[in-house]
Image (cartoon, rainbow, N blue to C red; front, side, top):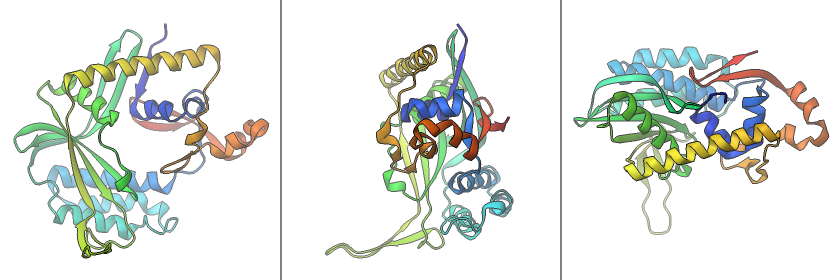
Length: 288
């Protein structure tokens, strides 16, 4: 049986809709243009690395500017100025407080069986208040919709970290970066509701989660379940369409236009999408 290699992007795609997984990771279709949300988040991620490692927001801002410059002007909220504001505010608010011995972008590959490997890239590893911990940066215009528990990315990355870095890695931190048009210097004002006063809060939020051995075991069983389901879909050449997720909480599915075309689906794919292959080991797309 052929070995299957899955990262979190592929697993979440299958969980979202098996037809989406089919289009993206079997037929290798992808959007012709990178979404500004992905470009902005990716640019911020690269800008955060020197801040986390050497506390240098100047290099961080310069790195972000270079990455996001081709996309500036395509989005009213995600701009070069907003990215610079967030990175400088992240440093000024000392979001790295309590962290030491920081390493970034650590890759792991975990063989769960002779036919299944799961892999990923941990954004940050180090000591948080003296304890080994890992962190993942999340950029969103709607951070209030983020769910930390249950969140299987955290479970999978803790599993990978414990295998790679030792079982004492028990702490996972989501660092949410809120992208708001009305923010300034890393803060935003929340309007008053009823008798509640107006208040100012940081656009950053750290969420700490842990996973018990029972939760880890349950998640591993789910990974094997996803593996079996994907294999069954391949063998039967039948991929379930989860239509209630066509308009997800974060926006339209990237393949909605093609799926809406019915019998014209292939023509839409060829006209509006490009052939790309996702490399789960590197965590990046390669144009074919």
